[in-house]
Each structure stands twice: as structure tokens, then as C-alpha cells.
Image (tube, rainbow, N blue to C red; front, side, top):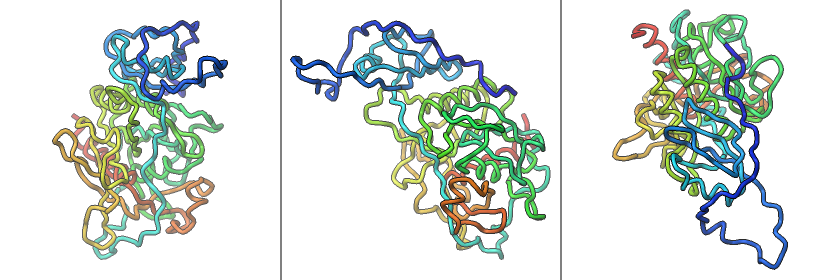
Length: 373
């Protein structure tokens, strides 16, 4: 599987005025005309489009992502303000931060009498199913590693490429991959729900866990283009749509394109109880909230995102998302900042709708292995 997509950054074009331009109120606060104009900082945006590639004179087109109908562009605020008037443009969103929706946890073990604290997977379960983990990368661990053939590098859209594959300096992606498909650790049973499944590493974040809308959309473009080799895509992340965005949301659009290509898309609902972040509100994705099983009685976790969107209640389901066991690289940022979350020599506990989405992706792999058609 190639480490880089066929996507090619487009050479910069000559600057030409973008006309006509409709300025928002924020752009009207210009410097006095008598004073020299200072250099205007250029911004990035993600543009979604219908049909043929739109003509965008005056803007630098950095990435063309035809599989999800998107472009990554750069220009001045004045130039970007004119994009909604360009024929074929469906939506424009600033290239803002996307957040992962899990955290380390010191939550107590789930009631042992109910057997709910034990790993759910049995050896080999989920074999043949391929799950794209769109996250911070995955570092080799005893539970899941590249030597086994069940961990395969796909694409790196981060700004901090690392030697030795698409490894994970932050820890979030490694944890999610282990919850989905981790094998046995410390001589015990498998830690993952589907320990026979294969994880495809779609690294969309820097080593400190930060990422932006354009990086995630580029990762989803790879998934859509390689849909014949992907069964499930796990997105344990959430994005709050900026107020200045226009039209269709690029992240939601990309998720829907991936689903249209035949991939089951599992997304987290987010950790704000009063809303569901993008792309969790699309009916085309399986949106997952977090359940709390730590008392022995299942209940919706108080932090779990929920909302009614276009008359439809989201999330679609809840799964265990409190005190979930998984594997972290010991030197990862999450592990170093949360030593109290360590449960054993190898296992850690994590809490959030990220973990719930990972549990659900593993369950989806089990179903697809049993019913591939």
C-alpha cells in the first residue's frame, strides 16, 4: 500500500484579482486609506465543490481532493470572501483545528462480577476486515505491530513526518487501534474487540496531537480512493463548525463521500453533552456516544454528546466509553501526562466518545467478518 496518495499539490498560480468580492463585516474594518497597506496574512480554507473543478483565479490551490470533492486553498481574507460566489462551490470553511475526543482516565474497573472489564475479543475474531484509523498514527506495541501484518501504513497528512512509519508521538491513535484490533498482552487475552482485523494507519495529526480540517479531509480522500481495500473507517474526533463557514461542511461532505464509496464510517459524538460535533450529525455515519459501565449498570456518560439534528436524534448508539482498557506507547504525550491512568504494566484506561467509537468499529469488524456481503 503506498505511503503517499496520488494527490499532488498544485503549483502556485499568478496572483490575479478575484472579482466580484463580497466582503463580510469583519473584512470592512480596513486600515485608513491614507496609510500604507500592511502585508495581509494569507489564510487556508477547505472548499467543497460539485461537478467540474471550479476556477479559482487569485488563489493558491494547495491540494486537489477529487474523491471527496474538495480543495485546499490559500489566499487573503478578501480573496477567500469571494469563494461563495464562484460557480460550483458548495461550501467554504476556514482550516481550523479538529480535536480528538478521548482522554486518559483513572475510572475504576468495571464490575468484575459482570465480566464487563474483560477484553471483548477472542483470538482471530474479525480476520479479513480492514479498518482505517484516521487519527494520530499508530506505534508498534505488543498488542498490534507492523511485523504481524495487521498494522499497515496508508498515508501521512501531518506536518511532522516521522521515521520508522506512521508512528504516534501523541498516543491517541495507538490507543484506539488497540481497542479496535489489539491482540494479547502480558500473557492474557486480546485487548481489542476484533483482534484478527487489520488496521490501516491514516495519520492526520502532528506528534503533539494537533490537527486541522484540511489534514483530516486529505486523509478521508485517501480512504475514499482506496475504498475497495477499506471496510470500516474510525474517526474518534470532532470539529466545531466555525460561524464564518459557508454552505456545506467539508468534513461532513468527505465522510458522506467515503460512505458512498461503500465504507462503513464510525464517528464519535464528541464530549460536549449539549451538542454533536461535525461530522457526527450526518445520517450517513454511525455516530457513537459513550456509555458508563463502571457501576455495573449501563448508563449514558454525562459528558457524551447528543443533539437533535434535522429532526434526527444523534448519537445513533452508545458503547462503553468510560475506563476502557487499551495500549499506549510509554513515551507518548498522553502516557507521560497521565501516569495515574496506567492500569497494568502494559494497559491504560481511557474515557471519551473516542473510546466508544473504537469499541463500535471493532464490533462492526466482527459483524463484517461474519457477514461480508
